[in-house]
Length: 318
Image: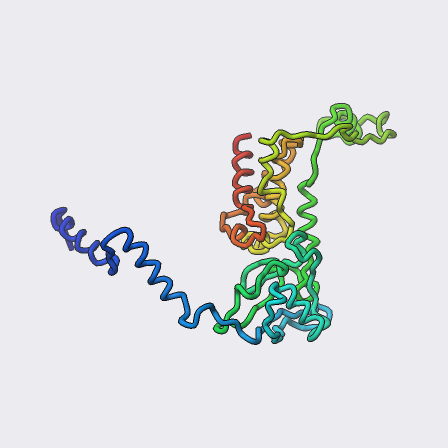
């Protein structure tokens, strides 16, 4: 064992020398060009572009809770066709020609409604925007298709989204405005702790009156909801989150929290404190452990993790 600093100083350069890269370049241009040529030789085939298989194997999750004792995988083979480049197209081909009972959701076929979210080759995605040709080759001529993870199965690739939508409903996804008179009257009819009930007002029905004019925003305030309003509630992010798997009954999940932040930062909303008070919960919000699976699989390239972080910051400052 080394016992003095001089011996240690002599040893450190020797250790560093052993971990230096074996390939050395003489100049910057040689570094860039040489590395590019080496990568090209490694990843490109001598025969040119990658070869596409004649047949594509689809390994599809099948399960009908009312009939089957347990799930199973059904394999189907289709001829590769450039005319049906998206996974959803091939699922229709399988349903129309091979398995009429195959169940899956779909609607817009353009990546807007979020209905066809499923797990493809281990990653959550939208079937209507999943390009089959980008994920197969003659070396890997198969696609594995499963329902969204850790969700109750209705049948095959269709999952029960009721709990997810109830969580979305719980954040009140609409603009809230304060009418001083109505607020006072509602507190008298349905008093909060410390408020006295007033029976004289209970026979009236009061509603908030809508604006007679547009509720305008500045360009600066409008820009605050960019990257938020685009969420299509496909649940790809939430069902890829391990924290949501473990605490789905209490944790709101990435998608719902991103939507909550969309209303928190909207300058037209007047219920900021109410919204933050609701979110400030050890389970609703703080089960996020920044695993970041939500960012990796979002089909709209949004960042729920950033929205969650911003909510936490706002709560800490209030």
